[in-house]
Image 1 (tube, rainbow, N blue to C red):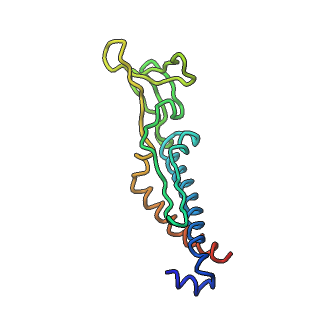
Image 2: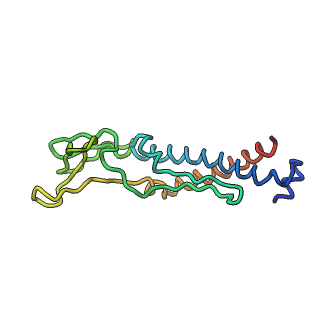
Image 3: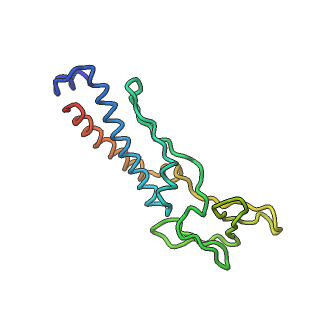
Length: 169
């Protein structure tokens, strides 16, 4: 309640929306970092590939909401750690806590005109057509129940601390 905040911190009522906006943005930045870490703890992918798929939308004074928009685009198999072509197919590390996975019959191709190699698999017994191999997206990891409880707890605790700091300044 705004009246309680004015009495408690003895601040002008015009300062409160700005303080709420700043507290939301600082808490949101921490949530983005925690989301990034949570995804990387569940998928064996480097930060440089995960971070661009988590886009923040900052709070404004007329819109006091901080949003994290998470991409539903799946990661290509070549983005995972430890990708190797073997006689049986491609092995890669999907989860940092588990052993490697094998995709039978898959292969790595250095396509002309591309700087990054592709992991492909044949759709039929013939030479063509080929299919790009993709796996889990950030959205699939984030919709996990453990993630929502972790983030809700962090947001609740950190927002009140941030708001107190902003109002005391």
